[in-house]
View 1: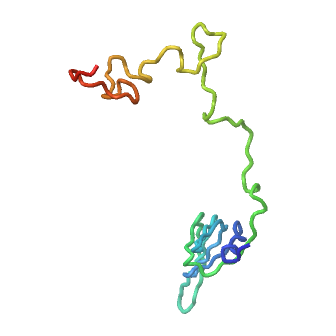
View 2 (view 1 turned 90 degrees about the vertical axis):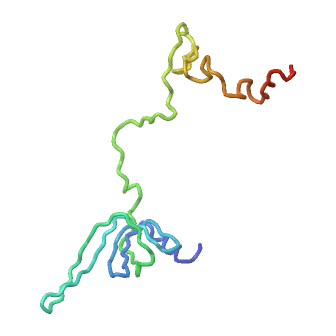
View 3 (view 1 turned 45 degrees about the vertical axis):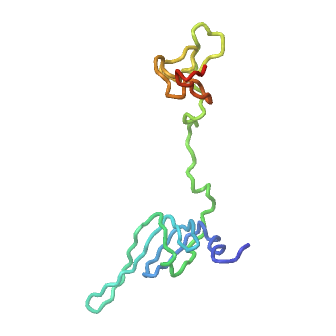
Length: 168
């Protein structure tokens, strides 16, 4: 097992952490991920700030709390990390159980509607749109239209010689 900061931090993924920042804020949240710069990803995060105020020679401290949710903390700002609580017992316990219902495909790979061609009721059905007769405007060159230059002879064939060159 490799030894280093990465392997030590990896033990605490999914734990509840208390992180102190350079500006004396305290962040608590569920530790999800980190990178080589020690940037941290935290979920369900709360920020605690201590505000100091003075009234007539009396120093008053009060703490403000804000819910932040999912955040990324820049590693440069982290002063200390402390484990506040263990991970949840299991990942399955966090997921909400499914209710009653029927799972139905969303259209991918479903069987297309089938049509029977006239007079073929006893035979294998043909998928919709693939009947016996061609459909106008689907595939091929429309009747009466000229193909683009060089495309009339088929693939790989050279164009015919110009008229009057003596070639047959």
